[in-house]
Image (cartoon, rainbow, N blue to C red; front, side, top):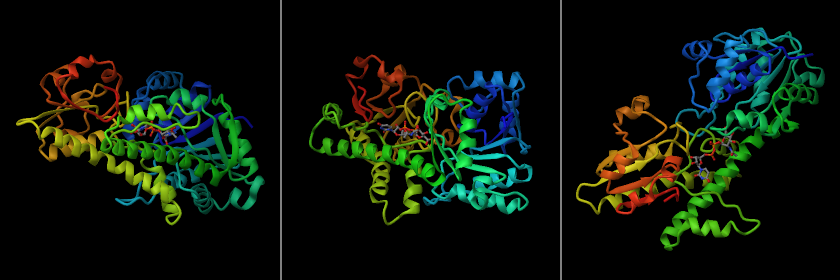
Length: 415
Ligand code: SAJ
């Protein structure tokens, strides 16, 4: 059976690009989101998130009538769930309530022959929970946990693995992990992904697919923690860590990532905790990597305070607020944490440069913290201490002679 109508539940950083790509391939796509504002924005052909070219693809999809957004789920051939999986409160326990709510919202419109995909990054066992929520809500249908290959509704976990900033390319060019709850579930999921994925669809099972996604991000986190630990050791031993890593990486079997001011964003700083939560006794390296990376901003703050102490009325210019280079995303950004702390500690006059964000676009929480945004040249003119927090292209290509009279703390190694 061909997929004619697909419903994407959750129109955020993953759901909206996925919905738009499916629509661009000629499918009828119904995007569902709890936010009325998001639904209205998309139905106007506009986007509420910044991702290269997404605005163009969404505008075209809405104009051709292939993409439509709504608050209430409607019947479809396939449902793709791409809702957040944050932490519960202040501890590192995963909060599956968005997935549960999504399951309960699609259950009434489920039909025999439907495919349900969980794309959200999830702790191991979540796809089975999703299947149980659907089963409880729809006792009239059979599900793979009981009926295996002959289930009325097929269910699979196919985690999103795209890099913010490259989402539209990577959705098409990355290999896709297909974790069906049965062979038939996987086969059906491959049929759906083959509509837009040009790379391989690798078939596994739901639990392995869940763990694969967490493993990829935990691997990167551990590698960055190693680099961050090396940076602190190198500082103490008076070695340039960038040169050190460059040399070590010339070995054919060594590939160390870059140290930085800490690890931000919504994925790498979060997902490893899902492994720790499942196996607290066993996940020691993974937990330690999280602690190492979380402690790096504090180290950088102390270095900046020390540097500022040399001046009577220090002006500290912080270059970059985003969580990584060339994006405007401030979520879980170590740069923001550092700048806020400098202001709170009153280390001097603190100013920030963020070429990807206009002053009036700063989130309210940061406007309240009064982080003054100014241009790079103006900042370099008045600053005594210049801190590189993000390796944005504007900073990499800046005239380095402008930094020569400053005390520079370069957490990204670009100067
Ligand atoms: N970072 C470093 N040093 C490095 C690389 C990154 O300090 O050498 C920092 C960045 O500055 C940033 C954080 O790590 O603060 C995370 O950035 P990232 O580019 O490593 O990853 P994300 O969070 O943007 O996206 C990751 C990707 N995962 C992997 O590369 C294994 C992406 O493919 C996933 O889809 C995404 O997480 C996700 O949604 O889980």
